[in-house]
Image (cartoon, rainbow, N blue to C red; front, side):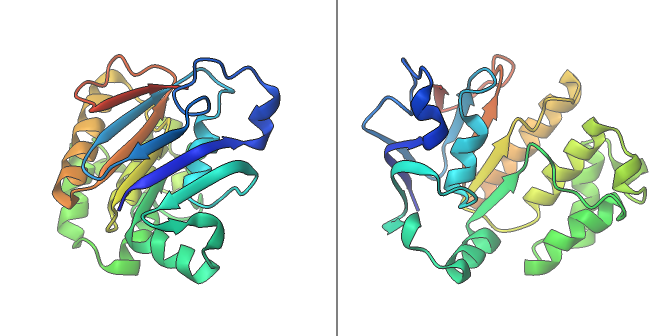
Length: 214
């Protein structure tokens, strides 16, 4: 599946200066499976809006967005549900964790939908991200950086053709950024999936196929 944006721009950005944007000021943008796209921009340039539109959370945009041959404006809620279960996964900037559940319970909520991974694999990935001691702690008492790592693990516990990652390293130290980025890339490669990752600064994230500035 490809993702194509044809002259797409969120309506709130129409009144802003978007000169030089690699998305808002071009005729068409094509995202392809198996490739990594790093979308870099300062706050307010539409990084979160871009991913929210692709994921079907916003419909206040001009232009067209296609998942494969399907115009997302024509998709039903049932079609969106199926897409989010098997084709698109999202690491939300706001994390969207359940504070009263443990870290592991938050991860298992997603994993149980498709039985994507056995517990052993989840524990292995948690170990890579230094989260083993925190799996059975309530998400609400974890630091924001720890919560970000829980959100990353949760997003990896489903089948997907694209992983959308919205500033998912903003509160993580450089050593854990490197580990998390490597784990994300490995999981994307294993599934032959594309990665669209937004960030304020992507200089510490090498090996991207495409670097886009908003």
